[in-house]
Length: 153
Image (tube, rainbow, N blue to C red; front, side, top):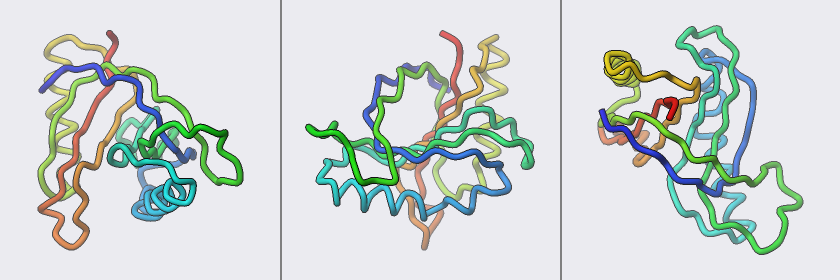
């Protein structure tokens, strides 16, 4: 477990209310549209896709706020004619761990991180992030995902 603070990140983003049962409606689809839009608007892509969960509690039925974000350079002109918006993600104090391999292991890494932060008496904020450092849909054993669980500073 690593504790760290992520500095503000400028992103092109999509937001929705959803549940864990409905996440497959967004996998590959939204990220692809974000990449296309960044290129169409001539924004420089500066990092991997982030999935940001606010209020997800592990129950597949619980509704929560999902943000899917792509780090980009801030454009010189306002964003118009787009299905997406721009913002800075706030600084994020978290515990983090790496998952190497299939996303079927996400539950395990979350469990390990939560167990460690509870044993260290750290308090969760209710926001979690998954940063998809490498996505290999043909060979999921090559996936690299950083899981970040927000904690009070």
